[in-house]
Length: 397
Image 1 (cartoon, rainbow, N blue to C red):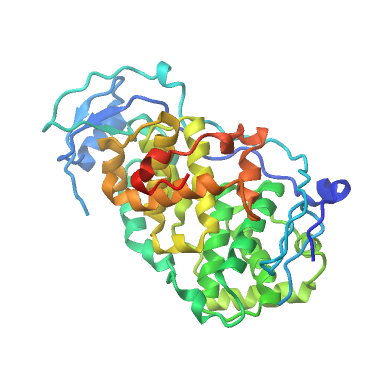
Image 2: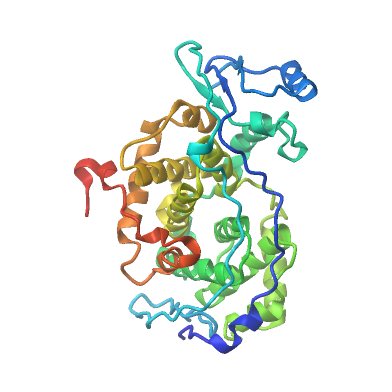
């Protein structure tokens, strides 16, 4: 079956999205901290009580550590058959997403006099949130340390597909590419997409599924992710509609029970999105850099081979590659290295793959991510030139 465009009904399908958000963005500047020192709780409490008006230097110790998928709602063809070709895409108008920028104009950032501490300068990216209780500055480092410890629980074997009798890597790619478009048309939160793909991979690694049920797995994973992340959840009838009524309500609810039981109701695992937000803050990212980073990481979601990298590494590589793409040269400072715990050399393999994905994004049959980011809604981000210089002698352009 082919997913055809139905512009007359598209607006009726898109649920009203809860506007606003709790994301607190940090402007530039902040305290500068040494690489080999760590703030104590007393220093944090003193900052909160006295409220220092200007950036200052504090100590910080470094601690390294064979049926097709189908729908009549969207304009792309999604078929399990590898030989099937996509029809011409007809974009559907959508509402602009309201997202505050991560930071203000770099030229407007507060000047900070940098002092030499052990020859290394590291920006304290949390100093600007000292008076923001929602930023939980007192616990943020412990939280991300915990995320790094448990992120591998949410990872799956990069070879799990060999256990699937009726599925292959190409079918997964088709499903993920389509779900990215569904996610965009429903105007869902970014974290919902990453949790959806995580649930799909974890479920398929545990449960054998026939190909005619693969789209159902994707829809139910998105339903569960919406229940976990969203304020307003798409109705089951909407999910049935975008599948061209290939499934019944009972099918959806039965698959939901099966998936939850297989995953033992464990939904609270850090995805790439969790690390992306932290690492973009460390990079003092503006809106352009943020869009390029998310463009690269969504291209990586489609690729089965990227499952061999942990979420934190994928996020760090996306930020690094985005910095190289925007600036035109290699860029990875000590602040980024400190907060990600990855050196430039550790990121290079993953980053090179992202550059190749960027080069090929607008070609072939799976172009959902490229079409999404070449729109005005995302400031035509997909049209930026890839950082081919990162490929060196392996340049495939």
